[in-house]
Amino acid sequence: MFSLKSGLRVGLDIGSHAIKLVVAEKGSHGRLKLQKALTRDIYTGQEKYDPDGPKKVTVVPLLLEMFQEVGVRPRRLAHLATCVGGLNQAAKEIRTVQMSDEEMNSSILQEARKHVPLDGSESVVDYQIIGEDPKEADKVRVLVAATTKRIFEAHLDMLREAELKPHLVDLEPLAAVNSYLGHNELPDDGVVVFLNIGARRTNLTLLGRKDMFFSRDLPIGGYAFTEEIMKKLGVKFEEAEEIKKTQGVGAKTMKVESAAGPDSFALAEKSAMERLGDEINRSLRYYVKETGQSFFTHIEVVGGMAESREMIDFLTQKFSIDVRPFDPFAYVEGSQDVRHRSQFAAAVGLATRAQSL
Image (cartoon, rainbow, N blue to C red; front, side, top):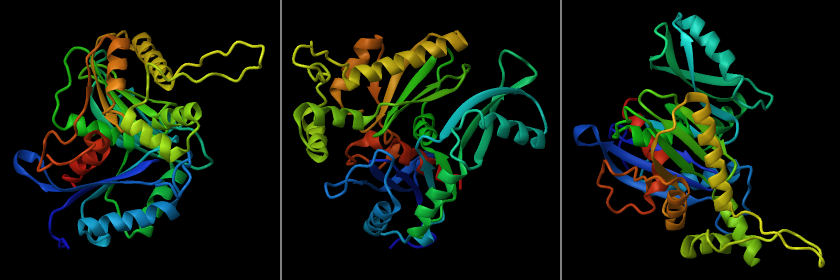
């Protein structure tokens, strides 16, 4: 077992399909030195996939198993960072006049309520001033992060069951982006497209040094591709997942026919890949309309499907832009043996944040 004063930095990402855990120490030149990186699928064949997210009774035993494997006693962790995912969250840049902390807190809370879907509970809000507004001298740029109290408390309750006490809770899209920002400079001209393909949805974030931060959840994720295979081939979830991992998603050939009568033409629906491309395009066009910025330097892809050659090729062709699978371990010492690296973006980002705890 690691001792209480071992200086471990731990990033824990409990996703809708898998749990990712990164345990590290401070390395050289401000980098992390990896001790262990683990991932566990939440649904292994015995449990039915729940599109609304995994339940505590399923997640807690996996957490205990993972921490036992890495040799860490949960209650002794001094530097643990986790993240909240799901529908009821939002990250948005606003521009406001300079004001006192008290006035800023009140103003930000009112703004956040406009962007977080209500679930009957109060909002949990945090913000960070990210610089002066380059267009208006008397204003500042503020990044607002918000979720609902119900989602936040449910996350903490799940961790308490595993004797885990986080010292930092982030939003999952921001945690993933932090794994990129920690060691990459943003362009002076144009914005980077950061695409985080999760199980239930895809988060698109636009990042630029001078341009507006923008984040939006797209309603298509890895499960849509699995569901497409299930429907096309008539197989169960676990078999479709295996086909997706070993044979690919069949972006060019997978067509799902709509229900039609014997005397009707069968109309081919758009594939999940095409629908995702349309959603990305719609968001980019909205950004151009709102900001006037149309220079997208390249696309960084993370998540379970970042390793899909079909996905990278499809996006490259559709947007005529350089598309790269992002490696969050590129600046982490001792990580050369980690597989499926792009899935760990949020966990690495959280471990990086935990360095400051």
